[in-house]
Amino acid sequence: MITSNLNLFSEIVTVQAGGQGGGSGGFISMILPFALIFGIFYFLVILPQKKQQKKHTEMVSQLQKGDSVILNSGIKGRITEVKDVDFKLEIAPKVVITVQKNVVSGKIAGGVVEEEK
Image (tube, rainbow, N blue to C red):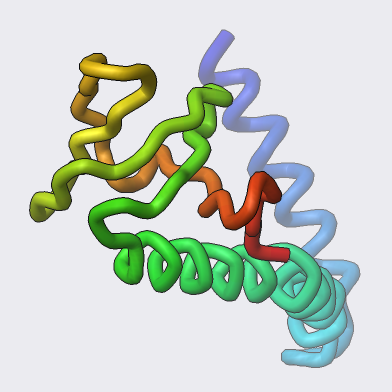
């Protein structure tokens, strides 16, 4: 079974390679669409995502004690203590939880959530 599949594959490759009269022209015409697709994908998906991640990291690094924030889960609270990788967040009177910095979705200023766009 495996041998017959390998033989079939080698015959297909041989026939296709034999039909190619040119040198690297076929290779370039084959790679060009992939490079074009990658370029479009980079500018439409990867670059905007990097910019958004940078804005979020900057926003989180500027948060300080007393700021009101909203988490990804929808929990709202006020920062009572800032640590290296997490915050202490007061979500109700005398109810303090510890959350990681990366789960902060946005800062609340005057009852309105300031999210990065």
